Length: 338
Ligand SMILES: *Cc1c(COP(=O)(O)O)cnc(C)c1O
Image 1 (tube, protein in one colour):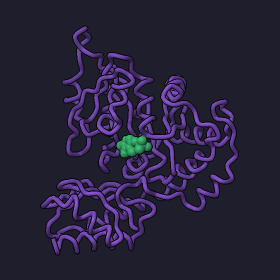
Image 2: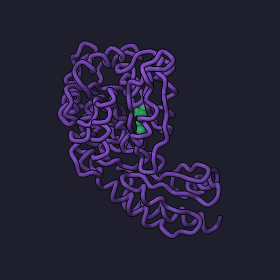
Image 3: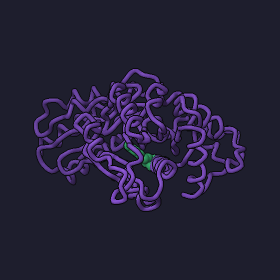
Image 4: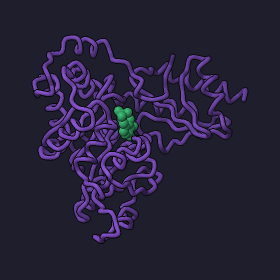
């Protein structure tokens, strides 16, 4: 099957499985796992932050970042469609007493800073304390510019807000911007990076920030489920994700552009080409094909998810140039007979 539902579906490469099998391990709860320590050191070096923490998921990573930065009765400002707000079970509110204040993403994936300014609350007992601004880059495949991130950094400083990046796909953003990961990550007080998306690891995320922040996050990792023991087996895959996986991401971006091109002008759908910046292609459909298109595609060897009138096709390391053509052909064949 050609699976373009998400970049989370990548399978570990043979090299990854080999590295996992050969990984030197210890008990990470004692800080003894050399491979986990190597992964954390690598994330620290690449992000330019002081310290890093290996966590099982991006959701837990964002959650413990919010728990570390904020107190009960604080609020964080976040995009209305942001993963951290919408797709993480309301964890910050449920477990941390941290209230979200949402604002809509602009069409380029930015949170307009004047709109952020407008929702920041005065120091008054009527209001929650505005503590943190959370950005997401890439957001639905769209990349915010370095200039925007730098102005967000200056703005946050001026407004006394902590700035966190949900950088699930920040490596895709850095590649697109032709900037080092460090340059991007330096705009933020903390960054969460998923190893298990386009980078290709089976499991894991890393959270990066100051030494003091990571010490607090380590405590919250314990509170939200504890530590993993011989986690070096997973960290070994994470190291390859941050090196080889990172280096090849540009191929996914090229393939996504090729898929975008193949779908241009196809009757019954319209490609949101302005959003094809990294590894996602967003397609609007004239009609609701949310049931029938995935069924048709699956019967032709392609797995895809389609919402009511829009769907995303996600390119990743297990999708070849030939697969791209098959995906486009299947959509064309479906729309032709629909
Ligand atoms: C996937 C994702 C996460 C969470 O990662 P999981 O590892 O699935 O918990 C966070 N933010 C964004 C933008 C994501 O795409």
